[in-house]
Every structure is written in C-alpha cells, then in structure tokens.
Length: 122
Image (cartoon, rainbow, N blue to C red; front, side, top):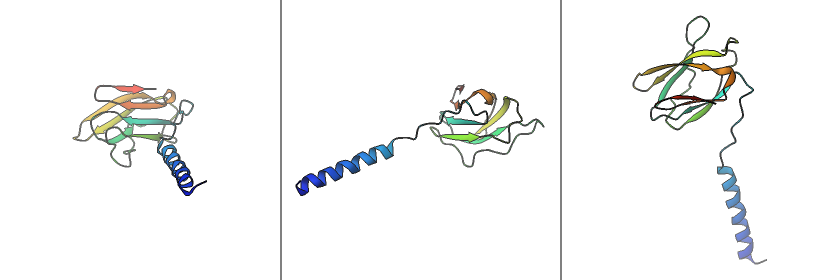
C-alpha cells in the first residue's frame, strides 16, 4: 500500500467517525415513565420559566436552569414533584412576561411541544 493510499484510508476513517459523532443521540422513549418527558420549545419565543402546580395550589420554582431558546429541547424529570395525580396545571412564562397555563397529563406523555399557537402531547 502506498503512503497516499494509507493516508486516504486514514482520512476516510476520520471522516466516518466525524459523521457518526455528529448524529443526534436517539431520543429516549419516555412513555413508560410517568415523571419524565421531553420538553420542546417549538415556538418563535424564548421560554424563561416552566413550573408545575402542586396539591397545595402553589407552583414549583422555575424548573428551567436557563431560558430555552426557540428550537431547543430538553429532558425533564418531575420525579418527587408529582403527587401521583396525572393531570397538573403547568405555567409557562415567555420572554416579555406573557404567562401561559396549560393542563398537562404527565402520566401519559413522552413529549410536550409548545408552539406559537398550540400545545402538543405525545
């Protein structure tokens, strides 16, 4: 094998490794986990807060560690927060101060997607 062929083979191997590394991680199927779900900001706005209503009627503190830009998703885990009930009122606060309250059936969803016009569950 010539040095050119060896170098070409090495570069092909590196290119393949880079391509596989660039592939997104496969999403975990969270349908069987009543406290875990994937949250997606599929809107055109920045989400600055996400809180869940507790039995007491109070909301949790903001469960986002940082604002969620449009097009961002993250896995949320509400273990220890949910009281066994499936449906919880959830408060979303958008940049600019607009507040949106939605009733979310956490026991049956694997993802929650917020768009400019609707809330989608899977």
